[in-house]
Image (cartoon, rainbow, N blue to C red; front, side, top):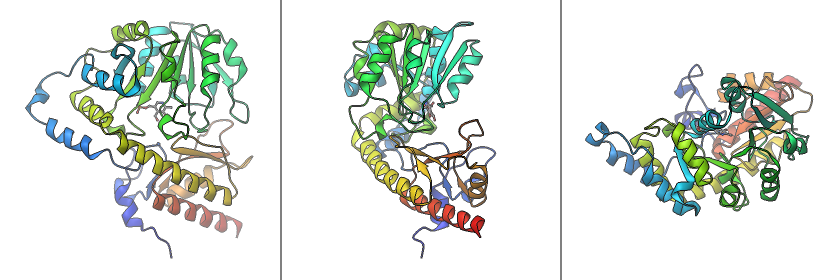
Length: 355
Ligand SMILES: Cc1ncc(COP(=O)(O)O)c(C=O)c1O
């Protein structure tokens, strides 16, 4: 007898525009949101802030948030920029440092927005294939790029590059190195973050988001950590009031309740182990993930039929119809009951097609 109930899980699921309406989705495991709610302190702070003060503009430089973030991450406020999601900060970085024809390098496959932003900026993208084990490709060091992106842990593989390797890369590249740490709070090594390096490496920018570990994707808020000079330059490019009042309140309250975020990250780490074990039992190769998602692969076997069959059963996972990824699915680590539902449905789809 299954321990999950469709109606229970449906109530938890969100949806994307054009996809199935909220109450019809059984498990939404396609965009790496956190399955657990934000801290109650965040929700209380938001309720309290929803008043007539909304007629006022927000702080233009997000100073209150930057001050508390400086304490939490042991840097100075001048080393931090806040953005409307880390996506906005990525776009600010490109507008600051990349002009027409400038090279932007990154190992692939990775977060697809990098490519889009380079195109918008009319830059020249230099994509370097990851080796099969997703170790850092040496060619990246010599790409002579104005900006180099490293997503760490990487999406969609979930793999992590070590801090000494990042330090070496920052020393070798000719321009700016951006380390996108959207998923770093889900890594087992609590000291994997490159934020500690921004004081000593003048060409390093580290990005964080509140969308994943802090369960605040709907609030749109991210942070950049870098030298004072780089932050001052990016401040000039951002919109005047780029982060709204409620997002600032939410992020500040979230940083005041780190134990909540850490507890959820630990729960996700535990569920990740169960998901990996289950997928391996079902014949998938699963990359070692340090993120809140895993990449499951059946070498040489296209996974679009599995993706469609799961969607029909109201379970959403991510399928990339691009070369090199068609035999893989990226699956967000959901709640234990969502994982159980997913594994049961995969087993049932496999049995049906084997029959
Ligand atoms: C690697 C990576 N960087 C950045 C982002 C964007 O995060 P945000 O919601 O802060 O814009 C995502 C979102 O999925 C991501 O996967």
